[in-house]
Length: 252
Image (cartoon, rainbow, N blue to C red):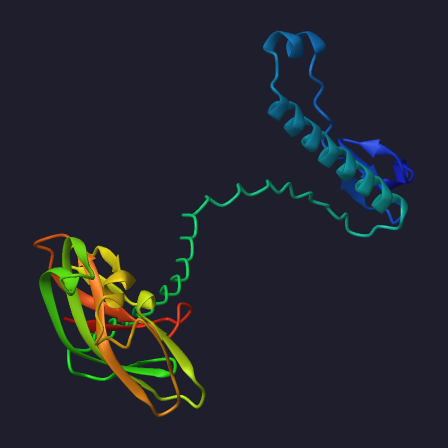
């Protein structure tokens, strides 16, 4: 290197720059110039262009730092580095989290046990007192196969056969109540309903149940007749203290 006496600060010799304090510092390397024709011919990709730009920026910054150091009084040149950080690739997608198990549905309430159906009350038997309204009835007997009721002069004949039901009736109320034979009903094995035959009761002089008013505590007895087909068998009676009452059943 030549004597500093021949140069003044800021002179360049042999690739070095003379600073104010008489120190020679190396000049930064010149930026390479790429001919346009070559660029076009090679067809640089986008990545190559970015790399060249970054290198050029580094070279330019180094030159500026060297000049600044030389002009500022001999401080040691500082090289500034630029770190290019590539974005990390997104982490590989892991397995999707398993969906949470659905909460179990509450158990359906058990259906209530069906209430037991009340069995119909069994009909009373012959000889057992039964009550409907103000009357207490007792069936004494039943006789079928009767063809005529009355005497040889005054009588009535059955269309089929007469069934005579012997009854005892007592007024258990506190007021008079009238007994009507026509309010009574009978049923056969085929569940056919029969009404009483009031004409037959008229020709039975011993009967008191055709139409009779009974005072409280008193009782009457007599026969109620039913005209039913020959061969029919009565299985049940339905006795009423009036035509509007619910009635009470007696099995025969």
